Length: 162
Image 1 (cartoon, one colour):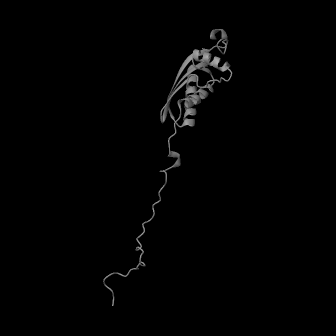
Image 2 (cartoon, helix red, strand yellow; image 1 turned 135 degrees about the vertical axis):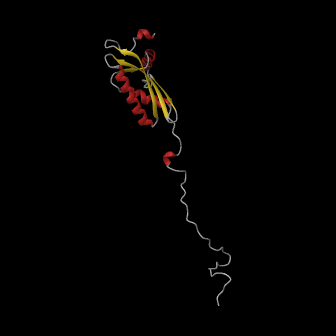
Image 3 (cartoon, helix red, strand yellow; image 1 turned 90 degrees about the vertical axis):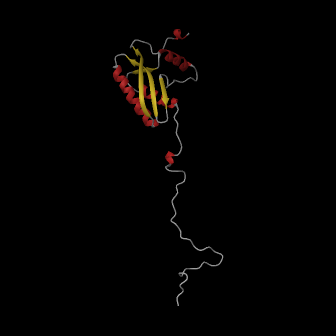
């Protein structure tokens, strides 16, 4: 005779729970995604200013950075023991989360095309800042504050500093 009340099934030993159907395990990533995207990187204005200042100085035809007054103070600072040259002189940056804007003040050598120098400075600064920081450079404003004549001295005379 056949038992018609319950289908035949394995009985669990006394005191143990009956086996349950196991669902496939889900793979759970800990930390939430790609490690490179965990957290936030902030870049200070001064970092972008240094990068831009060095990139601008690399362009042929750029004699100096900054206005006459800032160069005068810079010359004094450079003469003080322990003082160092300011690579950010003549550079102002506004840095957001993904974009930056720069203002540069330059002195060009006499005889060069100011338009060509400005274009080269813009290209060099944008390339350096975007490559090193990953920020999008939305604008580079350039103010040419002076032209270095061949017979002019490089720094302001000391008598004017007193």
